[in-house]
Length: 305
Image (tube, rainbow, N blue to C red; front, side):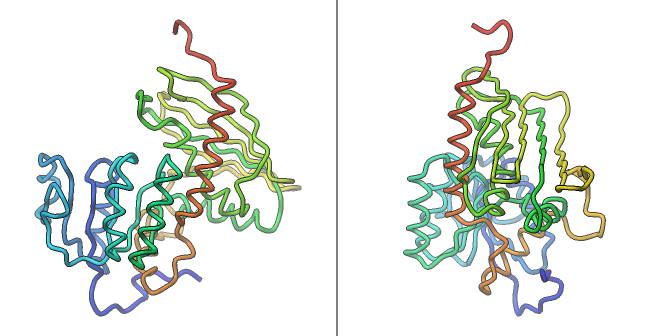
């Protein structure tokens, strides 16, 4: 049974630092400031123009510019700066929840793991879809029976050269919970379609085979609509369709809030629901394998040189 913070008596709120105030950082800010179990003691972002978005919370361009009286941190800077931001905190014993993907480089993940061990800190990855009720129910069903799963993730965001491709930005959500469920990243990979724009994969459709269960994943940048859908057909049953953007039907907190609740509770030792750095390494290996296959089959847009 999963407990929520409203059911737990706490002597005082957890003092948390937010590092990064971009798109995801602002979502974390909104979430954390509503939680009575959290005291958001500071925000760090290199762009001093974002101070107005801090809504009166102490703001600095670097961690050195803030007081050190915090026990945990949420790291939401761009992925290429995750290790730079998290390693000093972890080495000091600060528990960190780092946005996905943890890194695009295995060596950086290993460095963060080592820093966490040195400081005795907990390193978790913000894989919010683990807390989506539709995915939770799908995982529970697939633990008992095999089946076929299809996920579509469409984003209006355009791919940018040097930025995250659709695998790192969108498909990683599903690779995380699939690796968690299957207990391995070893699978049969079939890339059905893929496309590159400016050298960056902006469309990938692939099938992952884990024995009797298969997962067809489609991720698109530059789509005309934003869509997150999940279709599940267990053997012998009809297909069930879920809108991953829909609110929880039972009135539970949204997935981002539930993730934050579990992160706070993890300081008491229960962190089984949170993604680990070791799992992130397995997801990165699978991501890279899909990417290699996709580049072999990708087509350039019409009119491209």
